[in-house]
Amino acid sequence: MLQNWNDLTLDARNDLVFAGRNQDYGAYELRRAYNKRVTMIIGGVILFSFVLFGLKMFIDNAGKEVDSSVDMSNIVVDLTPPPPEDEIPPPPPPPPPPLVEMVKFVPPVIKDDAVEEEPQKLQEDVKDVNVGTKDQEGEKDLPVVPTEDTGPGEATAPEIFTVVEEMPEFPGGAMEMMKYIQKNIQYPAMAREAGISGKCFLKFVVSGDGSISDVNILKGVAGCPDCDKEAMRVVKSMPKWKAGKQNGRAVSVFFNLPINFTIK
Image 1 (spheres, helix red, strand yellow):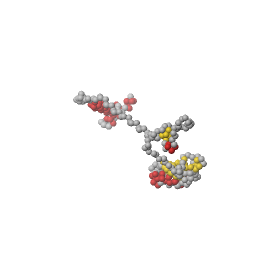
Image 2 (cartoon, rainbow, N blue to C red; image 1 turned 180 degrees about the vertical axis):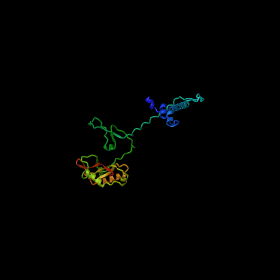
Image 3 (tube, helix red, strand yellow; image 1 turned 90 degrees about the vertical axis):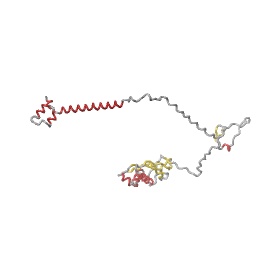
Image 4 (tube, one colour; image 1 turned 180 degrees about the horizontal axis):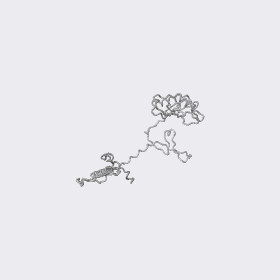
């Protein structure tokens, strides 16, 4: 009984609550017609869903219907297999290499008066001929490749090491080098205004006399070529280093150095 009394749509409860009041409109009418309206709405939704479902089935079936007026008897299907493709002949073999004139190598033998010696070829006759296991006539029109003559006075370039027993060092050590860079580096104005920062990796050669040469950028600061130029300028302006040594001898050594550009 208590549950029914709490139901706002209960007619007995509404008659008691709205006794002596205008019952033609307002809350009294809404509560009495609530169940009817809800039933009509649910029925309308179900009916609308059935109509949409039926319309969809009708459209799907209409698309699958086949026009019986089309004559299919005159359609011919060719099931003949395609002709075999022409086989591509293999490429011709490469021409044999040209014959090179060769002279048979004759091993030394003990001289015997009873055996007739084969005439030996003079050194002048075979100085420009290859030595092989048999005599062979070569092609006479082969081009002669000239040999490079470096000349008696030309000196070879000194070797540049990557790792040596004693690596080259800035005067005073690594801390002094960092102080030198911080003191002499000039942050590009355009990079500072744009807020560009990053690290520039350089590679250079510390020669046997301590001088710096061949300064190159391994990886520059993204979007700031002026930072790379400034880093190269500072490295080239460094004083002479303590040269690296290998086996007690001063040698040229590659050195990698990162320079960090940070806006403080």
